[in-house]
Length: 396
Ligand code: CTP
Image (tube, rainbow, N blue to C red; front, side):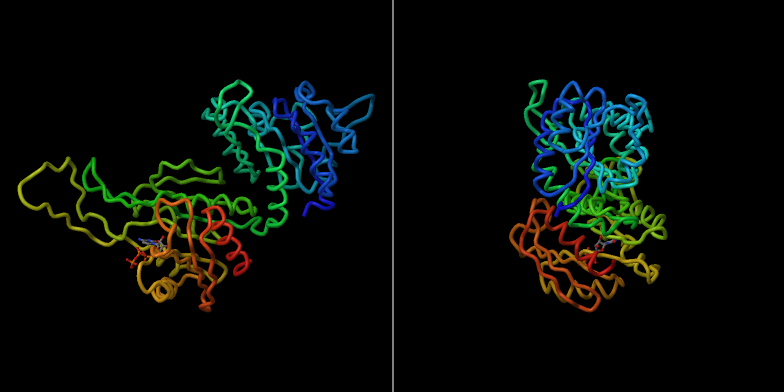
């Protein structure tokens, strides 16, 4: 998969830089062409001589040496992918803010190829809000982020922040080239998680959706080059780094957020478990205990999928979900028709390991022509890849 791929590696000042010679060897072995650019700080952690020897190309550090100028624009144009590994906090902040103070930051700013980063930092730095903000910022520039791993850190602490292992990075790049960036430039809206319908200031009607499935799909879409807006209900799960995350609470807020951006969207995937009913009246004060039965009158919420199905143009692609316990296929196909979706993903609660709370899922997909695509029980990440691949097949 990496045969003849041109990979430009940017190395920054982080202890994880000691793993880059191994990464270069793996990439060369896989048939890739490799060039390396280091920041001045990276030289303290790994030798340019070793990287030059292994990559068979001079590893560059400075914008100019002995009256010769390293052409950062050409380097960025030569590469099929610019991989920054390890990405330190400092260089991340520079990327997020457009600083240009060394060869690598100049290459980054002028690169026309996809940019992939493998961050490495200590756990507390990794969890700092400014790191999260900077990562969100570079994700909004359509940079791809290879997740950090948990384990022993340079500080001696154990936690999140380790750079992905060289083998993981190679696998990520293989998947990336395999997925071929098929959704590059496509704007995708995805809803995820539950909604909470307020009863009074302290109580709500909710459901068990964790948001994990929608988050896995959002990550997969990003990997395929899509511009992703995630509209998500209340969840404890860590949010992914995508182009935009809009947090909502109620079905109405989710409806309004979807309605607002749908016209600028190519693909909409409605994975959220939206409440079908909401209290007619939300009590202004906390409802006090009383004798007898408490009745709460409920009214129907607006059906977002149905609404988008009514207003969608021929160029837009709409995906719905159906969670069923009986007559699964019949009900799923009815939803597909009634809501004018292009594709529906069926989860059956009768399948082991499928549904709310599990890390696995089992799905069957139906398209408008009633073609059926069945999949085994898989992890939610794998299921997300199956869903996105099917969308690519049917839409792109
Ligand atoms: N959906 C929506 N807006 C709602 C309710 C559901 O967009 N107010 C979407 C979900 O995100 C999902 C699909 O519609 O994509 C689910 O269809 P729905 O008919 O609501 O399923 P159920 O809630 O299971 O309904 P039913 O009780 O009829 O099976």
